Image (cartoon, rainbow, N blue to C red; front, side, top):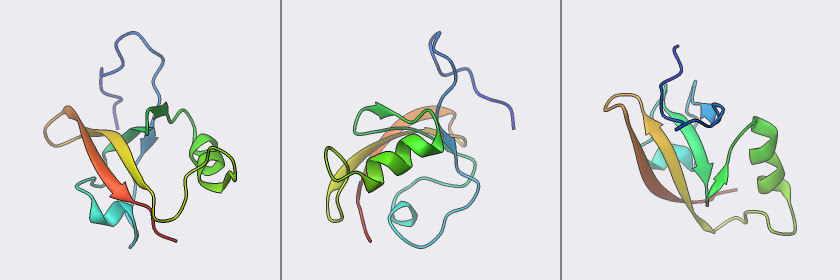
Length: 88
């Protein structure tokens, strides 16, 4: 898959969505082939950045928290924002 030119001079970042399992993301408009760019304003540069935020006891995300997700929609070729309530 070609990386879209959406980074305004920044190095490419984000997590490519290759599959969607039941849970938090499945309840958003995010689809397979989209790219998750940011969560609550934090650029997701690698999977470990997301995992660190999810597993952190300080300044991390908590179950039940509503987060804002910025993502690239591969169908419309635009950057969109959605919210999701984190599940366990």
